[in-house]
Image (cartoon, rainbow, N blue to C red):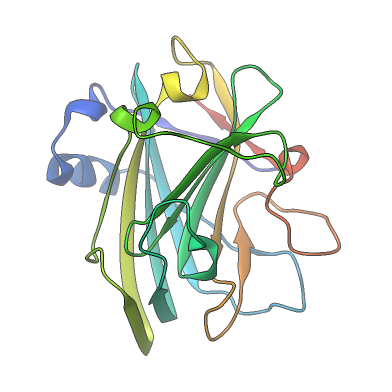
Length: 210
């Protein structure tokens, strides 16, 4: 189980996109680099930076890969089949977890659940304080190369996770996948000891100290 210390950024939820990206860029990078299943050895370079405030957490993913793909354009579509970064985090109730899956074109899948089989998708009202932006436009993408780079940022209100104030720590994991990219891959920040690819496994979440 991995552990990391997130850095406080006062009022990050109120910063402009540019100011927030600059603030996050100054933070320590953490690799999403665990290849948990030998059948899928491809390992693009993926890092994340995570900051928090009294009201929200912000995550910036930075990716370098050989196939950048976005087919899903509607929220809660099959974003995991594209070039996709994901943040899974335990809800404050200790029973549920929330998954935020974002493809390279910033199409979002977001839900509260107890397993992969019972998603309660967040509504637009639920996500009113959630923000996402990135380096690529929201349009279909299919780029091939040897050193293709993209980044994405998301801001998640702590209230969406059931917290009235910032906790001392969060249980979470961060992922990079691309089920239908040229080289399917399933990377995680905190390692997963399961026989087949599965990100819906809170028992393997790491610890993010706030």
